[in-house]
Length: 316
Image (tube, rainbow, N blue to C red; front, side, top):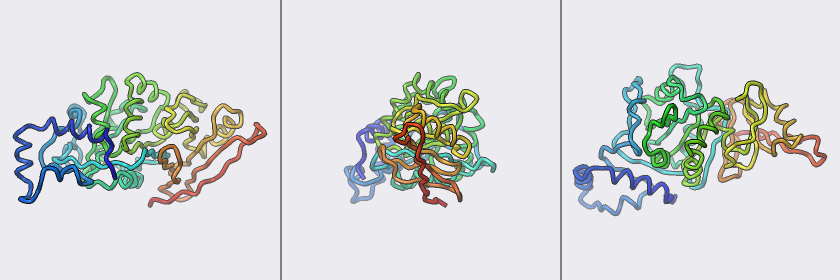
């Protein structure tokens, strides 16, 4: 798996922030036969020194969980997907438990990123206004695991100085559910849409639930305005429309496609998701029985639609 130039630049920025003393200790720790140039030839880059989080740690927003403070440990261990990858889902965490339980979609994302030993995962909760409890639940969900967690908050100002460098250094970025209309508006003001496109092209896995699924498409159905209706201002990374909670919004979605308001697209039931490589669907995935995915397109008569069920791969 080749490292993208964007990922290499992000890691180089992190390495430049290490003090000369730390660098000396690192090189001294190499085995007698080790060579500095070996660092760049492996599929993983591990540096046993204490590194600052790329872009500066969001110190005011770290939480104490069951295993203590969730801060990055002392290595850089980054791998990326070998193609732009999006996991657009109607699943994620089991929120009925406390702490939340991460669903199998996260392990699936880390596998796509090359199975790093300590995957870097950034949580973005713009869609719910960066609610402190949601962010706290995210950290607690991965407490005691090998996952190196961080989050990006935009309310009332970004909690990370260099957002671009921080996100490019991740293995995966997960977008939480909430209002996709508000998410899109805030992201565009902060130009986060441009940064996320760069991350996608660099091989960072982009994923999310509900609003975190809709946002990557051209448009879809949403209840951001109260009653469910169309939204047409998606980021357009994927040239399709999208519907989540399809068991509840299927009729609306089919009507919007039949009318030509939305283009053809993919939909997911609760517990299902879509794995895209580039702009092509690889497969549907699911974390529970009877959850399905669907392809919906307008028929040639311009008045009706064709719906095709896509049987998902069961993750667990």
